[in-house]
Length: 89
Image 1 (cartoon, rainbow, N blue to C red):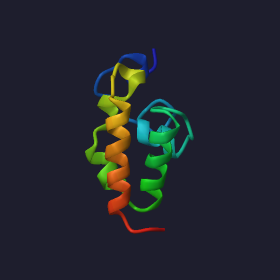
Image 2: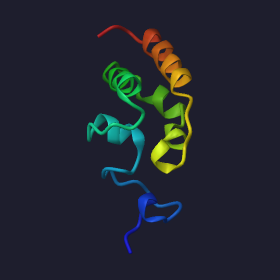
Image 3: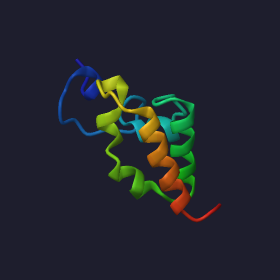
Image 4: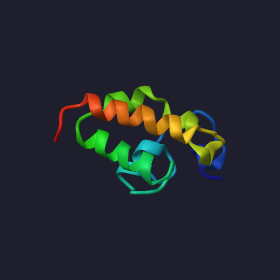
């Protein structure tokens, strides 16, 4: 049996493969996680250098693929506010 969160092993370290973490999945693997508005904002925030701000959101706990039930309107509003605080590209 494989290790990692998708295989049910708690506490395994992510290794950058699809399904390990929503930020990696959205930015690196171009997967849809929260839907186009939120995913696009996450990519833009990352491109503007806001990776540490994204880390503070704890998106892993919100990831619907792992049982998260995010309020997508609130998440989008938080992401827009975060993006607007960053320097323009």
